[in-house]
Image (cartoon, rainbow, N blue to C red; front, side):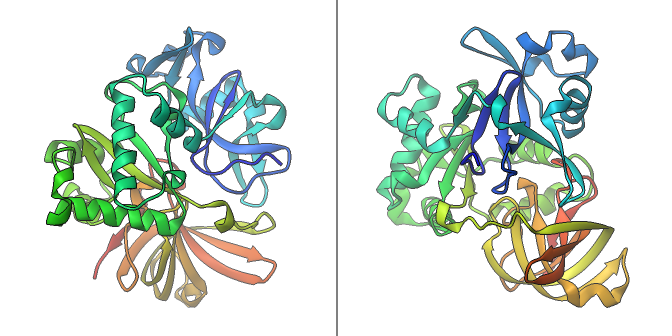
Length: 358
């Protein structure tokens, strides 16, 4: 089995795929197509699938185009590269996957940040280095940090955000506390000329990027986001603090089976928030009430809410009541069965949400 984890990327002949889970078949890696190689796919792919020419990037003489739309990536793979699709019968879902023999290179956030720390190449990388140095000065070891996304691939532009990875859930909590202290504690005021909270303009940009329908208003979005302390600005560049499990936190759940039971809306109490910033973000819940979509007698069987979209990571904390709309799943493990509600069945999470109500 190829040793990869969330936030890694794999390079293939047709482009770069983002690893999006900790569980993989023995012969391939579950990873989502993010950057398509135009020199392989052909430039007519842009018009055929209505891709944005402004998302074209260049690296080592090759042209790539970033694709953020879930439906378009599936259409491209289904039409042109079906060997990169894999039906996962455990989840009854068709997924992007890269077989081992198609992997050219595995790109890891820790290794990329180490390169930047040792040899910055441009002002953008200097910001990544400065961010890492500040977290280090505030008590976080460099070995728990990395940079993912376009920065990892060297496909970033001047307008790119920084996907700053923190390994280990306790370390991620520490990083968020550091950022909160910089924003609010006078002892950390010396960093405020460098790191600032997002402005109204930047928050609206994030909202428009994340919310593609009207399931959550801008004011609701802002109310939930500000208290997460996982976003900021470094010299007017937006950065996200992303959580990834350390190796000893990764469990082997490959034999678990998931069955789709259809849409549902529930109200519940969050009783554990250890992994809410992971992907999927996991909210252990109790005192569940089914509001819509399923028989109410199923409520006691619902034990968790999971978010596969970054939009609803860290949305609620232990002790808070939430309303959730998503997909109800039966989870069958070697130790028994329970139910969960899945939010983010697509990257855009259309008509799905997690909202705090108390």
